Image 1 (cartoon, chains in turn orange, purple):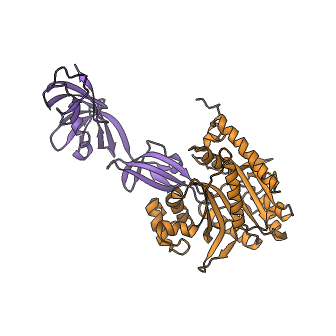
Image 2: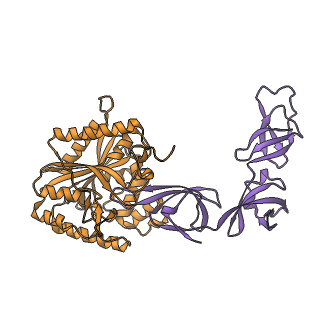
Image 3: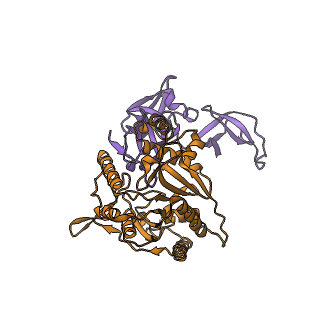
Length: 320
Length: 188
C-alpha cells in the first residue's frame, strides 16, 4: 500500500461521520449549543505534561490549542449557558498507536451540574454512540480511584507513602521511577497495572488524587484528606474522557498555573505565558459547572475494535 | 558509546540496561491524558536471552551497547574455548561455553556462524539457519514406509537429536532448520 491512501477503511469513515452526526443530534436534543472556538491563540494551555504546538503568526508565536477549555470557559463566564465543541485539538510529540498530534475532541460543559451528573450524561451519550443494530448493551460502571488501588494492591492511593508508591512503580516500570513524584508514580501504576484490567464497557473512575487535580475543584473526602473532583472514562480499557467539577477560583487557578510552570521549568520544558484573559473571565465569574473532554478517535477505535488510531483517521500524522 | 533517547528506540537497537547488553524488540508510546508520557519497551537481555518489559519516562536515555553481529567461520574447539575466525582479516576469537552453549548441538567445523561480539568478546553464537548433518544413531530404516508420515528420533553427528521419517538410516545426511530443530529433508 502506498502513502497517498488513507489509513481508514470506508466503513470506518462512514462510522466517524455517523458518530459526529449522532453527537450533534444528542446535544441538540439536550439544548446544548455547539460553539466553534478558535484552535489558534496567543496563549498556550498550561499543563505540566501537555505540550502545545507553536506556530508563527506575523513573526509572533501563536499556539495551537491542546483543548478548547480556555475559550469555552470564557464563553461560560460571558453567559453562554451549556455548550459543546466538536473539533480539532493539537498536542506536541504525542505519536503512537493511541496518539496522534492532531485529534478530534468533543468537550462540553453543563452549568449547575456536578461531576456525577456529568458522568451520567457521558454514560448516556456513550450508550447512544456505541450502539449496534439499535440496541445498546454498553455497560456503564463507576468506581472511585481509591477502590481501583484497594482492589488491586490493598492500598489507599491517597494516603500511602511516597516511598511505597515508588516501590510499586519501580516494580511495574523500571528502576528509573525510584525518585519520581507521587503523581507520576500513580499514573504509571494506574496505566500499567489497573487500566488493562478494568471491566469491559465504560468505566468511570472518580475522585482522583489531589496532586492530579489539573483544572478540577477539590473537596475533602470522608476520610479527611482532599481529593480532586476529577473523573476519567475508560472504554473497554482505553482512556477516552477526562472531566471535572470545574475550579472557579481565579486565585487558586493562578497558583496552579505558576506551580505547573515551575515544574515545567524544572524538567527543562518551555514555560508558557499565563492566559490572563481566562483569569479575568474567572474573576468576572465562571458559573459553577462540570465539563468533560472526550477523544472521538479513541471512541471510534474502541467501537471498531481496532488497535491503531491510524485505522480510524482519514490521514494520521504518518500519512500527512 | 552514544546515548539513545526513548524516541530513538527502534527494534534491533542495542543498549545497556543494568550493566547488561540488551536488544530492543518493541517500543510503545504511552501517555495518560494528563500524565507524564512514558515508553513501554520490550528488550532481550543478550547475555541471558531473557525478554524483559521495562517502562521508561519519555525522553529518558540509555547508553548504547558495543554489540556487533559478525559472520565468522567456526574453526575448532579445545574443549574450553570455541575458536571462530573473521573470514576477511583471519582474526580469531575465542568463545567461552556460555556463548556457544545454545549453538553447540548444531556446530560443525567450517560452518559460517553469526558471532555477536560485546566489547570485542563473543557474547553469543547463532548457527546457520540450515545445517546438513549425518545421522549417527537411529532405529533401522523401514524400507517402503515413505508414505506413512511416522517419525523416530535420530542422533546427528553434532549430538543433536531430531525427529526424522522412518525410512532414514544411519549414515544418511539430513537438512535441519536450527531455529526450530525440525527436519527439512534428506540430502542425497
